[in-house]
Length: 533
Image (cartoon, rainbow, N blue to C red; front, side, top):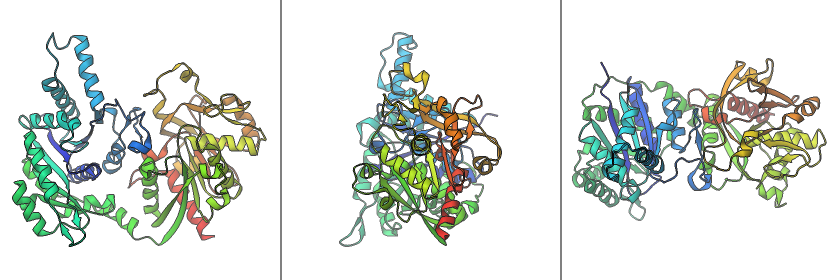
């Protein structure tokens, strides 16, 4: 018998950035622990087809999926919390749904009808949602933006229409600010938001309140009175570590309330392993400092997957990690020397990035880590710059560079992929998604992974120029992992160093709270050992 899929919509009011994504996955996590299957969908109301061409400073990190989809950073949390591997179908944008409907119109699928937002766009959204629900108990849909935004209206209308035909639960997230002068929790913004939702024809089943401290009983009573919900259906989502949110919501029985609203059975749940992970984050007995170089350091969301991968690893070792962001242009412009910038650090990460700004400063940081035995992990661009640093300072190739920065370099250690030279568009044209690699037996990387066959996600246009590999290897650099055809260098490591590893991939994208990524476990463990000494 085919499952009757239920649909949960998470909407937001008052302001953006309240944590709809964390609420969405926390609800999903609690339903999973009750034995239900969950499929998440993030709706982004922007016109971009995907997040691939967005500046990380403007929109946060671009998250890459196994199928090569470049999606909103919330899908990273979806995968981390729910332990899923998602596809590009799990992220729907205005641009994507309009293109889908327009392509159908161009093919003549609408048989001469006038194509309109209602019903064609709204029905397209519903069809997209229902296609995700096949053989699933729940589809949980996070509607991006804020109620009242013109961009979100078609998606909210789709939710309203779906609720007339399917079993739907609406969870509305609002801000409850505290008036510092008197310490009072204010409900008026939330009231206006719920009223705006009602004008669209949607009444929330549950109201979840973002607040600094736990929601007071009198605040709950006031919201229930003015927002037409039961007092028991007003939920506190107060400030905490993001991984504590499922625990906070479980204490208020949010999953039971959802199941009751959808006439489903409450099976009981177990969060003990998750609680142990959270306790290890909070109750640490060590502290290390990891420097992270970059060009997007003014917005830490640009590197959210790296930060979370460090959190996953540090929980295993019950250690606190102080991430020290290094703006490498300051090193290039001699505002600070590299020794001072990296003083008292226990490890270094050079993450991915594009363009020339800050690259020379990053190369100096890599050299300092190599020469001073500081644990180092290079990711994507960090891998490429580690090759350039080695070529310059060990192989003595003056002017060694990447053609991304210097098209006329006489030593193009890193060069654009051949197939990329004919491409003149930016969106979804890089090497994207999961690619296999074979690890050399006996290398540090192979020991960390515990296998010789791995798969990691990629997002790049430039790769190691294979004609320089023999020279780099003769001078001691070890390429410890390659593509199955041996054409793409995937991993490198430096001998006689406590931990010097880099990869062309983005391993941070596959780290999970209960299964930390082995490369980050290795880095954190090496940093702890350095800190001891």
